[in-house]
Image (cartoon, rainbow, N blue to C red):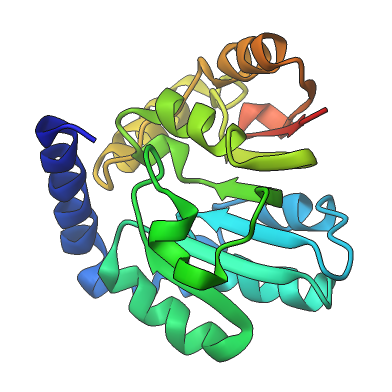
Length: 221
């Protein structure tokens, strides 16, 4: 990693800490009303016992806790760039998951998880409503795909283009999300398709009602 990349990672981590230092206490209570598609992603993981499941940008650990209940026996891993969010994740998950701090664009499992890092990649990787907050989201997408084990799957859910909402409501939603440093990734479907083609992977995509969310599953050969 270059000095510039290291500085950018530190800056983004500091920004996320400033955003979530207070919000982390009410994050799960408030986000359930508009972060749709997360549970659909979890239901589709099909994580069998012994499979290694990583959530990139795991936040409070809410999703990983639900993965553990839905798919008992899966080995859970979570990383986040925000030390503040990891405080909540640690409380929520205890010894049920391996947690560590890292940048979605450049993390190395060994550096994040030490001796607990899996050899040969992860069987499932989930990225939930995080690409819309990562400036270099295409690098994060590509990097996550590169951490898959053979036959592994990358599951993505995030805001869609919101084009099905009435015009004023769509504009209001975009303006409101911007207050939290969130930008809808309208180019994500094409980026996911390009990534799958370049790496010889299979892609399945779902557009949520009114374009509110988008869900993509990229499967490694």
